[in-house]
Amino acid sequence: MDHVEYAYTGGMDDDEIERRFRSVDTGVLSLAKGDEAYAVPLAHHYDGEHLYFRLGKTDDSTKWAWIDATERANYVVYGTEPAVDADEIESWSVQITGTLRELSPEERERFDTAEINRDFAPIRLFDEAVADVDIAILELAIDSITGRRTDDSTV
Image (cartoon, rainbow, N blue to C red; front, side, top):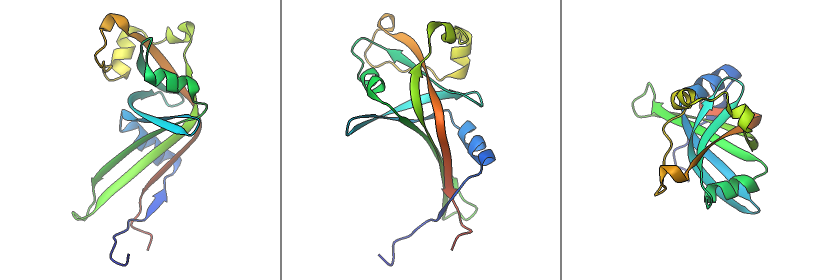
């Protein structure tokens, strides 16, 4: 393995985590049920304190069965960009872990239709009729948030 290329990574401070996290509006939500895992690409809204997801909800949703079974969820956002040296790629990721809960109807009132359309990417439907899909908003109560990025200062 002497000729395998490596890239060192380092942690990010809170300001860089915040900046990187706010630079994207989609990520991957990982759910768990027993010893199985299920990951869902999602759009999110982060208001500086709370992390929200807007999802469609149907009676036979696989995604909702996993959400209901998950005690602790993980959400990851990430990105890559060309480095100053054109042969290199800089990369970063932010991992957020916490518990998921659906907002109550009273809590959901703060998200009117205009705000939902402004704060979230359009909802993706997969062979469902619009009339068959309820809109739900989940909050991931953040227990931990960490970030890593490539770090060329480490040798």
